[in-house]
Length: 201
Image (tube, rainbow, N blue to C red):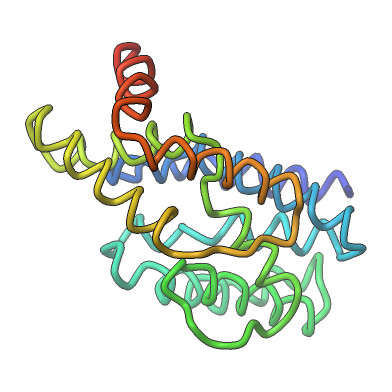
């Protein structure tokens, strides 16, 4: 990866320290960038385009709610297109814009490119520890008490990951998700993981 792209990532990442919504901070962005990079290599896509799309996919949360942050993030990319032309061709910027716009789990349309699918997959937590941790942080940031947080986390994860059938490009991510689904089927087992993870917070 070019040093200029690494520098861009390093410059933008600190902005996510100002995201107030739990589960969408700098650690999450780094995780999505790393997974996007690995999948780009695996599926012969441009890793720089994938990583910069991952970098900006939640940037709209700085100024907008979760419900519309994907739109705000895509607008941010368009507003900074002139700057991005230092590093990317126009068609690559369009792929970054589209991947940011299409990254949400509720997106039901056709992906504009493989880049969009990669970033969308990378944005999904497939590891049970990260699933619980991100969901816990999000609900904690809403000011809920511990009982309500637990109920929200378990209900949300069951609906999002167990009852909805995701199909990932990466066999590694798919296996990780399948393992997490087995845990979500058994609430007593889920509670063991939940207590282990949240006791450190």
